[in-house]
Length: 240
Image (cartoon, rainbow, N blue to C red; front, side, top):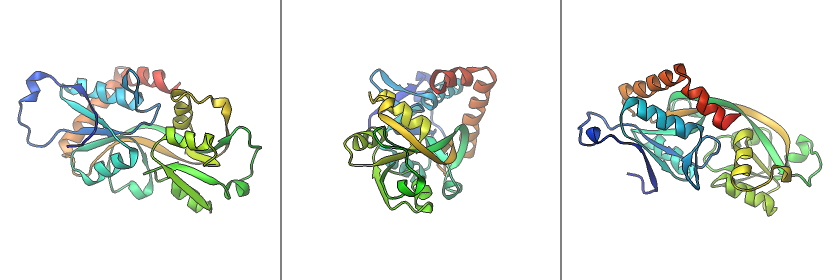
């Protein structure tokens, strides 16, 4: 059991005492707006609300634990009945997770303070660049011969370090970092997107050890929500 604050999404009393042959899926997530984050009024986001709706469709309990992102990834990879969102599907991760539901393809960008002039890629390579701890996208920077890569626990921390000039740039998914600017009170005009570098599709994924029938139930619930328009409605709320 994770030692973290937990949000009970849906737990019908009739199911709480029911023995199950295999543990049900339990979600973990990090603070990654607009997909999932702990807002002042409670957890929210595109993927979070999808998890709520899928649980309701299945009529079963679903738990989401919000923890630092690197811990969330490690928990799902090492555990047997966990799900996670939003996880980038990259070649190094392909065989380490079950890929349940695609959420969105995102571009990754390098952001500096808006006081910086436009920089060429050769100039960006020499900067201190911050990335989210536990993210595979640091490999994109290493492949492009970036010299100094600094990890931070979440987007709030990355933006703070950039504002304090402890970092020269932040490399992150463009919709996630810009949503974090809005959520954490950092005006977008304070930053500039210098260039984009790479892309990936984000997924709701699960541990390899998750029972195959349990995984299929969640995928089927998603497909039903897609057919009745629920997925599109939630997407419009957060991604447009």
